[in-house]
Length: 211
Length: 252
Image 1 (cartoon, rainbow over the protein chains, first blue to last red):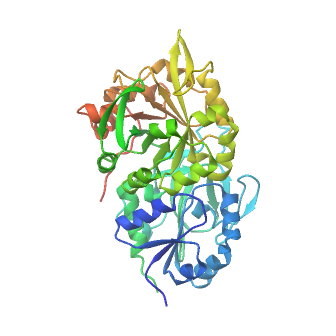
Image 2 (image 1 turned 45 degrees about the horizontal axis):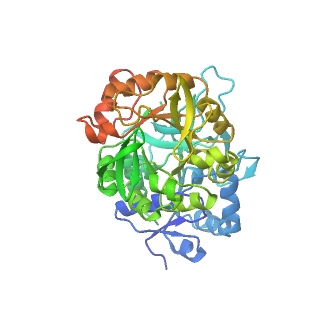
Image 3 (image 1 turned 135 degrees about the horizontal axis):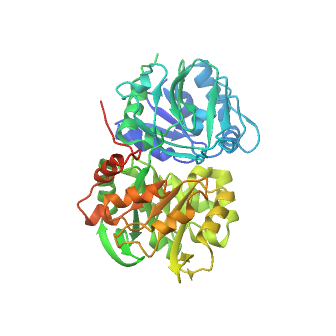
């Protein structure tokens, strides 16, 4: 039987507790777990993550989580939120520390910010508060003003040709800051670290009605 | 557009937040949890907490880090006493988003590379304390004293090993509230590709404007938030007035 909880996937990639306490602040019970049964029983799945792509995939694999994630997100279509590394992991591949395959849920690749050829060499990682411009209306951004600042920390970004981009952000050019594809929501910024605006985004995720 | 950050940088000692002058003569500024709550409500952009006891006793107080993290819905950096990958796991599990390394990075710069490979560059801040000795800037370390190392060279080395940011503190200016060490930040201008958080000396919002104008990417401070009438919002409004991009929170 499904319970109404949100599960935060525990794959040893940092900042899980930050995400959990943001949900707690919103009055929502979120469980941190790597237990396949707990993941299968949850109604919504959150994949946060701070760290390197290759380690992220390796950890998911070593913990036997790839199969269960495919099952709940792709087959059962449970509402999913990928945050930062968790967004990047849904891509086909990343070139971080050598090419690594991702979960391949969307047709996307993760590439490094490279300003070497540009006159103004922007700093990498892209660290700090930056504003999002909307590309599509999305339930995650209900009651969030356009151009709100959210907190980013990343050296790699997500590139996709699929029509799933809901917002972009400018850092030496536009990059994808969020995508939505059916039940899959993913954001490059850290809502759990973006104070009131970020909490609003998470509240919107909580409010998404499940079938 | 990326905003310039205003970051309180406070020291933790005996379970209290303290403010020092030139890293000495500590003065209690309050209980960590209530202070963090206030910072959070005032929409500061990040928070850096350096645990002085941990850097001396080498015991990391995860209990207090957890308590701080529970009140902190903004990026939290914890520094002090981090000597191993296990320490980093411990601090991140307690709720920190980034870690600041100082002594360990001086002793063993390859540790930065190891940490970055596991946690990513964005997680690793290298903290460099600087003192001016006979007109030349030298790296300073709380337990080792003044070292004959050029801070710019050290920062470049940290960058090469993958550090995500540099927290640059002028010990001479720290706690005096007379402004940042502008000749120090000028020395770094154009030298690094990673952000520099300049720390030490802000006493007035105009000091923040001066620091950014001279090359700092972000500014850290403590004194101004506790011993002056200026709020983080005042500082940001002053920066905005001078054409500096800052985050001013608006909700619908």
